[in-house]
Image 1 (cartoon, rainbow, N blue to C red):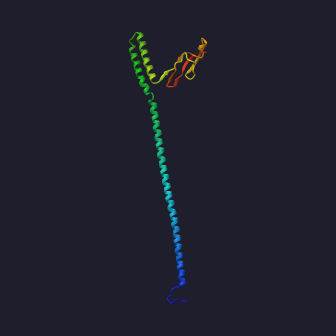
Image 2 (cartoon, helix red, strand yellow; image 1 turned 90 degrees about the vertical axis):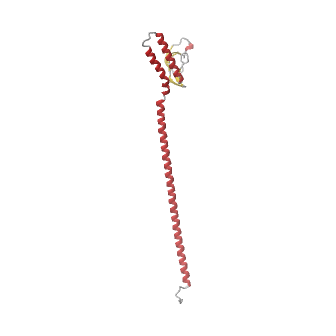
Image 3 (cartoon, one colour; image 1 turned 180 degrees about the vertical axis):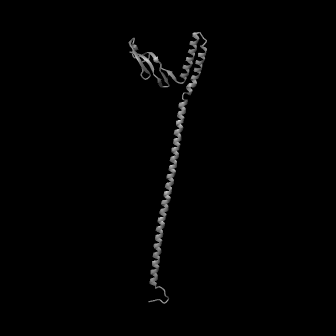
Length: 194
C-alpha cells in the first residue's frame, strides 16, 4: 500500500536510517583507522628525526673529541722536542765558566815560563769543573781495591794476584766509571786480580 503523502514507509525509513548510520560508522572507522595510520607515521617520522639528531650530535662530539686528542698529541710531541733540544742547556750553562777559565789559561800560558804556575792553573780549572759536574749529580765510581762488580765495571784484563786477599778485586783502573743519580752512564774499565 501506498501512503498518500508520498513518504517512505516506516519500515523503509528505519532501514535507511540504519544504513546511513552504518555508513557513518564505517566512515568513522575508516577515518579513525586513517588517523591512527597518520599518527603512527608522524610518530615514526618524529622518532627518526630524534634518532638522526642523536646520531648527528654523537658524530659531532666524536669529531670534537678526536680533534682535541689530535691537538693534545701534537702539543705533547712539540713539548718533548723542545725538552730534548734544551735538555742540556742547564749543564752547558754550568760548563761555560770552565771553558772561559781554559781560554784565559791558554792565553796566560803563552808568555809564562814557570811550569808550577801552569800546573796550579790547570788544577784550579779541574777542581772547578769537577765541582760543577758533581752539583749536577755526576759521581765518579770508586773501583780500586773494590770487589769486581759486573753491574758497574767492565774487566779489561786479568792479572795474577799477589796474594789470596786480592783475588777478585780491582787492582787498577784504565778508565773511570760514572753514575748520574742511580744510573751508571759509563762503566769503569778495570784490571782484576785472579
